[in-house]
Image (cartoon, rainbow, N blue to C red; front, side, top):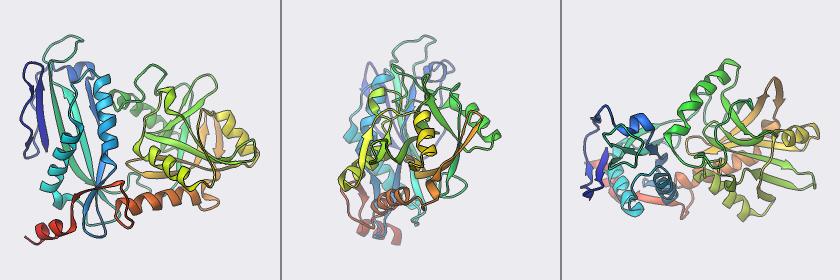
Length: 342
């Protein structure tokens, strides 16, 4: 693991890479009492040409710094932290799976270590990072459709809140709702907002709809970041950039609601609906339990062509089947081969 301590009096300490070990904290540590903590989610991949690479990691560093500012935690040097994470991966390079169906999950974490019972700006903090190899996010596999429970009585985030930040406090309260979704035969929760039930996120992913809009245009639509209630996902941003570069259909960031989804379904205009995130990359949606109404989403009827195209393009970049400046090399093939042979 990587770890570095900070105090208001001394600033940042000496960064360390050390054996994975338990953290020792005072019972009054404010990360435990007031949720002054945050995390990021990233991956490293062993490419087909035997490099080890990360996917657009500076986007994660940017988001982590924004979240730290919102959590009243100290600023850190993004470039230096990325160098530290890269060195940790180099040290633990054998944990990066020799597979194009698995990867190394990277969990940078930032917590207050203030030992005072009081809701105040922390005077001490710990920035650390741990790693673990992972396979497909869902038990059903890497590209199997999921079903969603959409119940407007549950709200994940709201304008002026912290839904746009990677805070642990955004995730804990969703677990009970996730359990309810599973008890009702669904795998994930489709989070809605407002009186008109705006579509915001699915589980821990951003959500996209591909349809023919009411003007007769093919359109890819997702909730805009300007609402402040969705996470600025790295995968989300990548899909928007890819689709915009293709120029084959309209790409729109705007609000839409369940009434729009139902109307598009009724008029046979909805083509695909899918989630997007680091864990699963792209995940097709085939059913929504909207309150007590079952909506069948035709994503798989046409083979989920757009979803699969996005998945293939991104995984081709991640595993080095195509060259891209979105791939950040941590260890080149010659160094990886030399270390593996020792």
